[in-house]
Image (cartoon, rainbow, N blue to C red; front, side, top):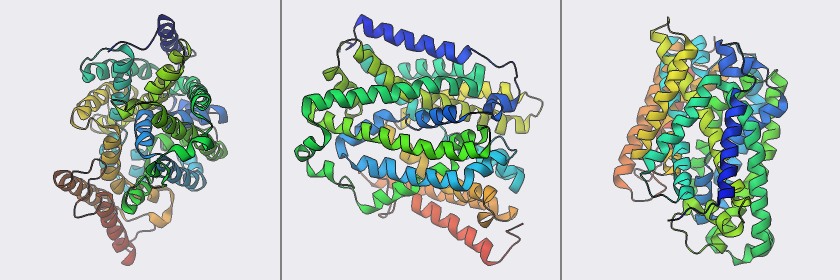
Length: 467
């Protein structure tokens, strides 16, 4: 397979990576404290907050393309609408409280309310939740396509992960935010151009509607209602997402934290329009691509001349790298600061976080080996981890959900274990690519149900739950 890029396209690639390095190293803060490294000193302005929120939310761009190519507008229902709803609720209910909280991370916030054991176990769950594996995998797939070299995907994954670890670990959240501002602009410009060129070739979005098969026009994409509902529950991820907490905590004040998220929802809606219809144009214009995950790259190769093609591939890379950088920082701080320094307090937490980023990248590469599908990785991680974190994290900021310390560890451990066991049983008994249901029930439900039962028991007997 030959590379689709010209020499001019490769120069654009080189310029992008040089710009990343310059942005991440320029204006490097001389302060090396935790708050500076993890939250940029809690002084993020509205434009910077919106840029980093918008860009990091779309790291799974190839998975989105694969889904929209196969199932059409249901992408908006499954991967869009639930997250708009919970992002708005997060902004209204939690963002200001998180900004006012002195804790720098979720495990620290849990420990302040529930004690050290809750902080330690939550750090383990969060380390898995913020795994960079899906984004390393997508970048590796894209680089394999761009270079035209059919090498081992893990080789590409290793190169990409190490590059990101290199520049993020030196400047922390500063590097993530500064590069996200560039990457957000590239995202909208690249996909906006794709829609214009595709519409010129196939017709405007409302003109192609009648050419699409029923499954692509069906709001559920032909899936059962339980499958759709479980993705709404998985969107509860927003409430326990360390990236959202980090950005809310880094805003210069609670109002900026709240409004930045609300404005971001509008940008996400527009970008979802771009990605959904790019997938639909790909379905109409491409002749059975070998890999549906490559629908966006192949559509760009069909429509764009040299120069523009390189710019669009940089758009895809920027979309994924913005999220990869954030996940690496979050996983590094969780493993290094919230776990390792807990048992070795003499270690500098910033240095521990930097080394932990490298370990996180290695774990992500190993995870790719076992789950080599993007949507699989999202589903597995979300279904297993969220049930164990949701109620305890809500309890930190909303007293109604708070439980007694004696209940919080079972409230984390039991839902996690039940979801994991249910997922394992479903994996062994179902052949459905997008379902891990055991006995007809998706693994998220029994895990969340067990958590609600434990929480209800605490409330029912009034065991000093609302301190």
